[in-house]
Length: 262
Image (tube, rainbow, N blue to C red; front, side, top):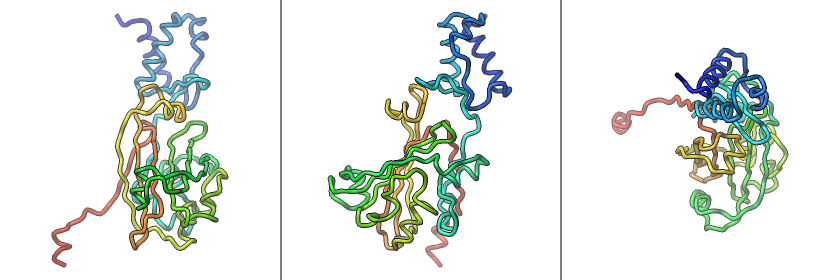
């Protein structure tokens, strides 16, 4: 016979999957379920922890236990950087992901801070600087509604961005077309980039910022963006809640042997 907490967890899970509790909706307070006769405080708490471990809800101080979005966002690969999106339009990368996912968005769902900082070892290596040299850090927190999805901090050489909208800390993208359009207008057209991904357990700070369950994993992204002549114009570090994204890449399969003979 299943323990009481398991029975309660299964009952709540069925209601979540059946749509009775919608994505983003807060589950009842523990005391409310106790008063409704669903079990003791420890029973309800154990049921909620089980739902959290199964990826159905998130729980955080001040927000309670909230039903998680079950359909992850598409995090596009190459196509999210299509120049036609940001050079000729206003579809910056995080908006391109929302459009591809069929999800609503507001430009203000990206908040940011801009500071002049000393380059770390990784930032200095990417930009060909010395550790400690000054760079601009543009740190963004992106949300879907009230739920954070990821952070992204871009690092720039001061001579590339001073006096541009990139160093403006106002919420939302850096004007029409975002940061890549700003660089384009300043004479630094992006040509190619390298993305490196790895998964790890979130830090305490990331757990609080992204409203994650304790012990939840994140995907860390390192993006290096180049002009055609190889100049690095951006080095970015992103931290994505692993369960909130699916990563999609479409590309032509190379044939290096054929290319070598042509």
